[in-house]
Amino acid sequence: MLLTILIFIAAGLAEIGGGYLMWLWLRESKPLWYGITGGAILVLYGILPTLQSFPNFGRVYAAYGGIFIFLAVLWGWLVDKKTPDLYDWLGAAVCMAGVAIMLWAPRS
Image (cartoon, rainbow, N blue to C red; front, top):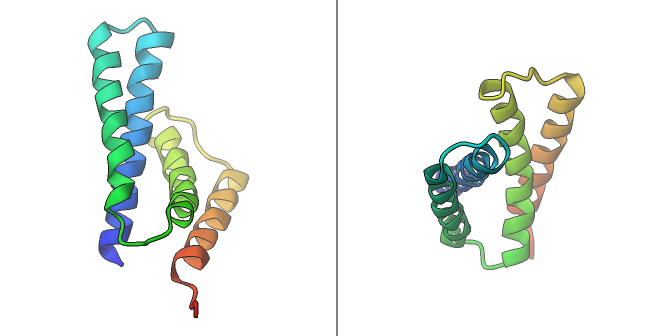
């Protein structure tokens, strides 16, 4: 279970971090190397979820989506300095509950 969570966190940070560098390059006129680095990190993001042991692609990506939402709220708070409100946290908590249900619910 710990490896599953770590892979999801790594994928989320790669997606958000790579996208953020692309944003800075295209929207805030940062140097080209921001875009190149962001693109390389986004390629890594595409690889990381395939390391999960779950056999179902759709389930893995659906669960990852919930983790991504939680990480994006944290990123906005810690990097963009935009304090999440109660509804941001509540929405992230609902998503995390959904992740737990999708990944670890007993199935036959």
